[in-house]
Picture 1 (cartoon, rainbow, N blue to C red):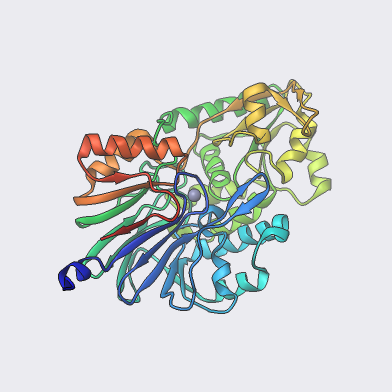
Picture 2: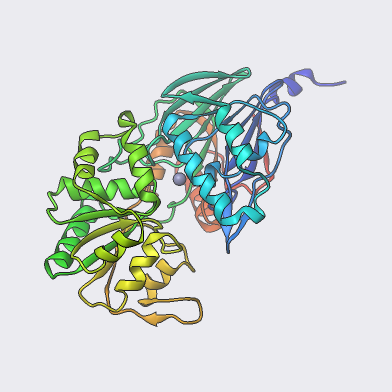
Length: 429
Ligand SMILES: [Zn+2]
């Protein structure tokens, strides 16, 4: 005899499509009796080769949620738009930033990417712009709230067939110079899918990072040098501008690379920012670098240059790095996590820079400041302890050891069922 109660109790499933024991290609499927939703659909770029989440048919897809513009959350989403046009839910600024970031991905790795600019265009045309609030997707109610990670970032609470599933996306629980912290207001949960990027470490207090940045930049400039600040185009570049402005940094500041476009876009979405005036005031005195001629002029002047890419993997920041590497008066100030193997990480660990196979000691000053737009170890555990109900917890979007350690500590400290799932794992609720 079939146990009908049993079948009905197991209608909602969550499948890990990506970000299982890895940082990158986030993707989760939530499926009910008649509803199918994808939360994030990113790309993982390793050794210049992209890897993608598991796939599913776009035909019966009720909607795609993009929590924020970073490529590890958005970069594969256009793949759903080859033959179908499911609605994609994201904030207005996420839509604009996704456009420039995916275009850049296509530009750099077109050969390996299974879609083209046309699919990106179709996706952006299928966008339903969201703000904080509740939206109906299929039979689900989805509540979006600020995630404090980058401008436009949200987390998502999916209520489907009586089950509450919360996905943190990337989340930051402290205020920064640029953004307000996440402060999720949640009901009793059946499942929480939580990022584990920094589940093993705590960051330095923000104020200490800010002071160190301003002091270092001031010292370099007052010594007649140029301080290069390689920074992610989205989020970190604008944050550095806000910090320099907040502390009354009085020397020249130039912005180069994709940081220019991203800063102008982000400034246009004042509602996303903690203090839009601060960014506007900083921008009013910035020199926007327009190509090679400007760059060559800047290189022999004292001041600060903020430019993507943040790990010196390409972009205008590598132009400046090449020029300042042998100049003791100048400095490079790295302001984010540096992935092992990247030029930024090698510079930070060994003080060397150059083409692969020809790394040489640099003579310029090298500093690293641990700015982060993710919760650290303590913040993540506080977040878990604040959750109501008795949710199953999936620790995702972290290196394997981070996810496993975080899940173990959650089990010990809260008694919740916690997992460090692998790609393909399915959870029934
Ligand atoms: Zn992110």
